[in-house]
Picture 1 (tube, each protein chain N blue to C red):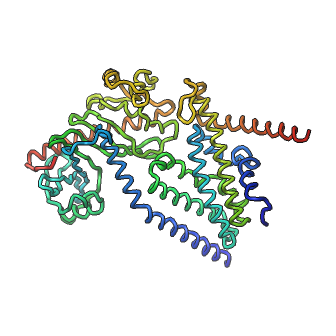
Picture 2: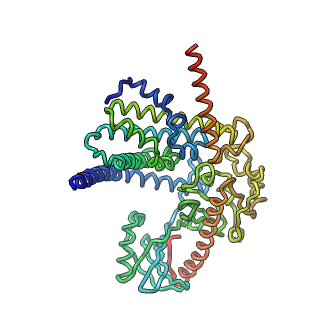
Picture 3: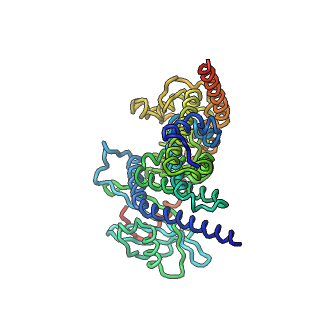
Length: 204
Length: 298
């Protein structure tokens, strides 16, 4: 079964129709825990993007030799391998970026979104489609995290990307992990509402 | 049965492949990583001493590394120090837990090799003879300027909220804190992770041994003017003003981070323990060095 979508459609699909955070509602732990600032969201997003693309391609390449009974351990192993490799490469060649991202990269091993994409997509499709799907999912996750980070950083700390824009802290509550859930819920409702409005406008 | 065998076989192959990939990546990157860590440590140490790219350390400044080991012989436990001597050679001095001198043995090792943990252990093992177990404890860097001690740098590790925090602490010859730098930590980003921020770690600066011994964490909010002084780099406050405000808060306790009391407390206790133990051990070591007429390079 090969997908009939073009590469661009696959990327857009990951960002809009199947956005990992607001549509698939996967990987909620990091979304809630890490998305306290725009920068954190961006860093984690980049890391997920890399791991997702590498893992998707690997699984798409080896899908025929993976025994169906042990596919989950194999996925986990693949993800863990890529996370470790990326962690080591970054530490060696980009120490400055690693100082900021190091803690996020190690978290990725347990991300539901990556395993789910391997199971749903990469294990059935060819490498090319898996690559673009990985890009789409990674970008979707990154943009979702940044949108969450934007709202939480602005409301919680009154800053954006570390720059003080409001001059005061409107609601410190938004930085705490618990507020992440409220934030995800409210934004999900907002995006659903936009979709309804958009569809209605299209029909009329 | 056949299924079990295929599953075992394929999973084994997958693991071996993964292991191979990770192994290759490790070998390819390990050297560069170690180099980065070393360069970073050097940079941090110099900045703690007040030197930077604009204000480089003069040539008269020298760093002398002292490695501390635990030496076990049967039931007895003692401290061992690998000390650089004035003539460029190394010596391993053993002191028992009561603080009396036990033995001194010359160690055949060069200064470059002394920085490598394995080489060091081998050389020390050869120097003190068989039957003794040695375990690496920590290292101290004695900084001298023109032969006079100006500071001590203590790289250390203490428990944080979830896992260990490693830090470098700089002390002046009277054991007042010159500065603290967090090297590695896994505290929660945005909460405990704030321990790396100036407004937290700079609170330790200037605290004397007496203050550190009684240091606690208070949950009152950080006063605004103190915060401004701590973040002087960001808001460009004058050096004199900063010094004035810091003087005023010098003997105060540490103000906890909002939402991260445990992390704040861990760092404070860690620093407290490091300073106290170091001051105690150094006094013993210095006394022994004088008594035994051991001419160290610092």
